[in-house]
Image (cartoon, rainbow, N blue to C red):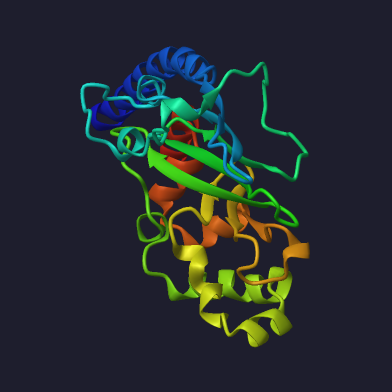
Length: 267
C-alpha cells in the first residue's frame, strides 16, 4: 500500500511540476512566435552594361535567433553561427532608392531576394526556412530555391538526418521510393545522368520538421525539369511514428503536457 501511495504521489508531483513548467513555457513560446526579421534593400549601379542590381534581404538576426534557444548562455549553437552575413558592396556603387522590394520586372536589372522565416516552432524543435530568388540581367528567367534547417532548441544545434531518423535503411528506402514515384522525372534523370541526386533528401536543407510531419523538397532542375518547380512531398506524422525512435518523435512533435500524458499512460 505504501509503495502504491508513493507511486501516486510521484505521478502527482510530476503532473504539478510539469503543468507549471508548461504554463510558463507556453508564454515563452508565444513570445518566440513573434520573432521578427531584419530587412535590408540596396540598389547598386557599376555604370557598366547590365551593371544595375537590386538586392533585398529579410533575415533573423543573432539576437532574434537567440530567443529560440532555451539555454541562452550557450552562444556556440549552429542556429547562431548560421545567421546570414550580408556580403559587403563598394559604397561608390550604391544608389538612393525608394524601393521597398526587388520585383523590378526589368530585364536590364539583376535581382536577388533572400528571405528567412520561422517555418516550425515546437517546444523542442525549430525549423527555419530560407528562400532565395536570383535573376541575372538579360536572362530569360530567374531561379528560386528553398532550404530548410532544423534545430534543437536546447542549445541551438542543427539536427542532421541521422540524428532525427537514425541509420534506418527501411525509412531511407521508403522516402526514396516516394521521391521516384511522386516527384522525380525518369527522362530528366536519364538524359542529364543525375540519378545520384535522388539521395539528396538526406542532406541539410532538403528536409524539414513541420506541423504536418516531414517535408522533403528538392531544388529546381535537380531531379525534374524546371517546369516542375521545387519538387516536394510530406511524410505524415503517422508514418514517421513507425520509423522514428519514440524519444525523437516526441521531441519533434509533442509538447510537455502530451509527453506527461504519455508517460502516465505507460506508468
